[in-house]
Length: 186
Length: 193
Image 1 (cartoon, each protein chain N blue to C red):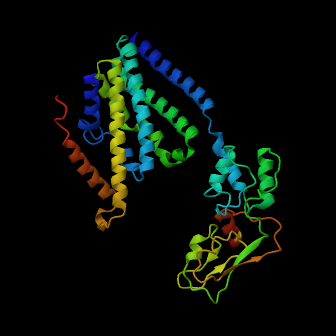
Image 2 (image 1 turned 45 degrees about the vertical axis):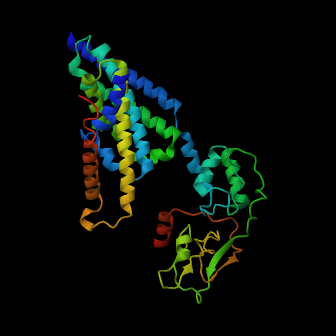
Image 3 (image 1 turned 135 degrees about the vertical axis):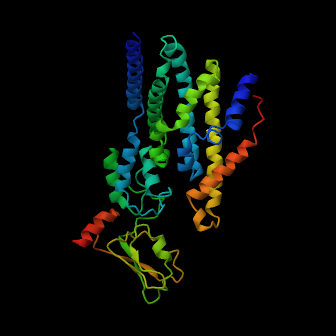
């Protein structure tokens, strides 16, 4: 008799908890996070903060929460704004005119004769496109540079310039390190 | 009323479960590297603690005792705690994905946090009524939160100090915890037993 009651009590509690959790899981689904990831993947990852948010991911979170329009990203340009609008099923909008004008595709170039090897631009670069160690000359990997201009302010000798690159029709987006590494190895 | 106040003071300061009974040391050492993580963990554990001691008391008094199934109490409490932890995890993930990422593995590990089971079991001897058991759970949660936040603050302060190599990391954390525990011994005598 006791055994039967024990089985029934434990089974009943387990069943009640299971049903409760199933309902809770349906109510509290964290689908927002997924959307943030997908928006973040379309942003150029320059972390330049020109949109008014501290970086690309916070901006993606704001878009996902319907708090920000999709046309605030100058480095991404019209191309990114259109792709974001398509992802979210919104009407494509022209870039916000109050933001800095979208610059033509450009890359940073270091004047290597003037570089003093202070390493400050390497720390500023959000996409690790600058190589060089302390007290050594630095240089920019043109194919990785997004032209975000973040390396300009820290340079104490102003040896970094931005030059237009006509070759690229669409802005670069940062790729995962693994993809870049595999490509380099092949 | 006085009795409830006494229970709160006793669980928060005098019989602080972390520093005096040494329950729940896993999150105490694990997630106190940053005050944000410690606060989030304290809130999540507090939620589970309060609810589980309330539900545990109700189940024990109204289901297990009438059916004379008291020997099942540990099993039933573990079941209830596991369910509540799942619920907490869902809530945290839906409300704050960032906190969910900070807490990481420690969130499902609340299930195996001996503090929660310990409070649910101690409850049976410490509390005489439903209200008392809820207050006991909430007091234990408040005591846990207090210690977590204090310890996280201490550890953050120590981070910037020049510590001799053999004492760095876990060793210093253990020594700090021991000193805190001794300091909390000073509260004995605050509540007449």
